[in-house]
Length: 324
Ligand code: 6CS
Image 1 (spheres, rainbow, N blue to C red):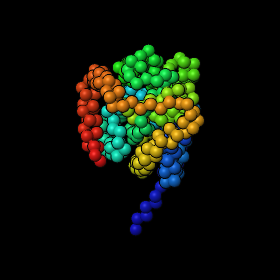
Image 2: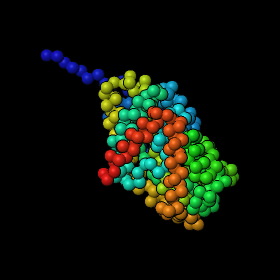
Image 3: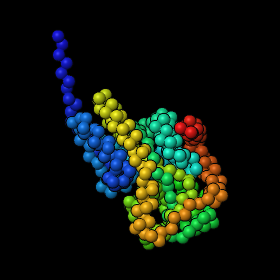
Image 4: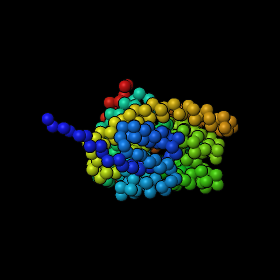
């Protein structure tokens, strides 16, 4: 009779850095991932919230070098390394309906096949992408048209495509690291910035803004990657556990992030009753939608046949998600 003694996988400490705080969406995702890993193995997952290991670009380098086993990095930052990743920043492309958003992020071939290969070429194992809510624009003054944004310095993440977007919207795009947004708004070095509602509340960006405007142009998306060498050298059992934790945390966060927009709007209004909320009408959005076509051309100009094919695949994925 043969005895098979299950050798326990040696206990490792895995380091996982995020671009937000532990109570923000990326932190809630990472905490759920950590819980599942630690409840089902002898491994420990150490979470590093924003600010502990530097800016987003520092985190990416540490993940590629294998100093971190996991990293959360949004397309707004990784776009300089993987230009095609900026397809998630194109205005007026991603869905607004929750059921379509949920289906798209779970089934998109762009994410689970094409991007998996692209990130792999950068020593990154793409594990998941998930939404963090509709993006709104904070400013000092009211605007309801592109002319209203004219001359306004609007902070964007360091993405060539976001720079093109705000140029096309009539503003003066101003790339700044995350850690400098609040101070730049406070000193009027910039007059506005864009972020999802939960972040406007959690980073207290509303405190240094007077107007928050929805033009319906985008959904904030982020991505979680493992260091590729670490992932590929992990045991099959650990790879299966990482996939299981990733799927469970993704399914949870897609639903969790949905409610935060309403609660953030209420919290901001309670903290700053005189803040103005503006939602542009369809007619007011039309000039911004027209400008978005120019941004798509700029994306294809910058990424060539690869980007063109990715945009086509993304639109097929979105069509597949329609009416789900
Ligand atoms: O705008 C930013 O830089 C930050 N915004 C969000 C929603 N997450 C992290 C990112 O660095």
